[in-house]
Image (tube, rainbow, N blue to C red; front, side, top):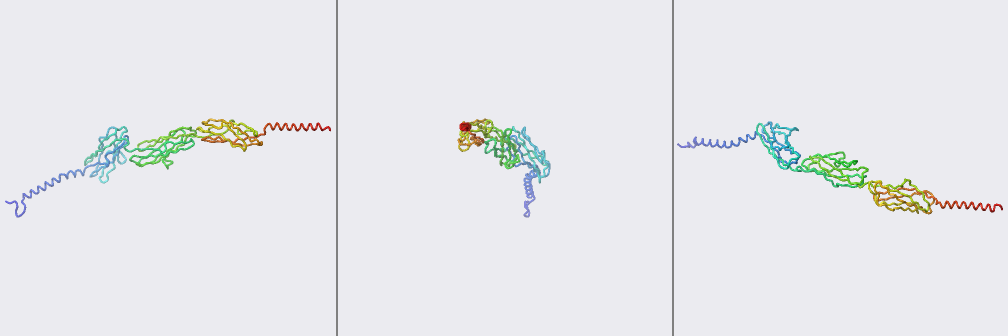
Length: 395
C-alpha cells in the first residue's frame, strides 16, 4: 500500500515530522530555561574592581546590586587579609545587607582599611551577595604600594631670608595636592620663643585651612616677626600642613644680621665745654654700639664754625661690638679771632652700617694772659696817675 494517498502525506510521515519538530523545540528550550533562571537571580558589580592604595589608607569600592524582583540581599566579604577591616556602608550606616528594588537600587560601598604596616603586594577578596532568588560573587583586588594615591608637597621659592631684627619676613609657599581626591588642608607655623609666626592661605588673612582640588595647588603665605631683642644668627621656622591623610613640613630659615645703631655722647653726658680763641681744647667723645650686631669702619668728623679746627684721636675705629663703647678725643681749636660767646659744633660718628651725631656747645673765653695784661695795664695807668699827681700836684 502506498504511503501517499490522493497526493497527501501518510500518517507515518506526519508523525515523523511532528517528532522532528518536537526535537527541535527541545533543543531550543534547553538554553531558554537557564536564561529564565538567571533573570530572576542576584548580581553584584563595581566599575573599578582593582584599586591601588597606600599602607594606612582605605580602599573604597562602589557596589551596584541587581535583582529581577524586589528583595533583601545580604552582603559578606571573604578573604580579607589579617589585620585589615572591611565594612559595607549605605545610607550613612554600616550595613550587612540591603533591600534592593530593581528600578532604584541603593547606593552601597565597601570600605577596606589597610594597616600602616601592610606589606606591598596584591590581595584578593570576594564580595558575596545572597538573595532569595540567587547568589553572586564579585572578586576584588587591592594592590598595596607606597605613594599609590599620589603625594602632597609643600615647597618654597626662597627657603631662607636675611635681614635685621627690626624687619618683617614673608615666605611664599606652594601646596600641591597630588592625590586623586579633593582634600581640606590645615596649616600651622612655629618659630623661636618671642617670635610672631603665622601661616595663612594667600588672600585669606583670617583662615587657617584651605580646600585644594585633586591635582591642584594653592599658595600659602608665612609671615614672621622676630623678637625685638634677638641677637644676630640663623633661626628655624617650621611650617606643617595636614590633609588627605598626610602631613608635610617645610623647614625655613630666617637669618638675623642684627640691628645696627650707635649713639654719640660724652663720658659724663655733659654736652658742653669751654675754650680760648686760638687755643686747642681736648674734649672726650664716646661712641656706643646700641645695636645687636657689630658696626664697622666708624669714622668721626665735626661740623664747626668757620675758622675752627677739630681733630680726632683715633681718627677711625675698625669695629665696635654690640654694647661696647669707644672713647675718642676731639681736639677743638676755635679761630684766633673768635670773640667771647657760645658756639655750637656737631660731632658725627659714621659707620658702614649706622650713623649718629651730637651737638656740643662751646663757650669761648678771653685767654687768661689777656686778663693779666689788662690788670697790669690798669695798674700801670693808676700808678702813672699817682706819680703825676704826686710829682706835679705840689707846684
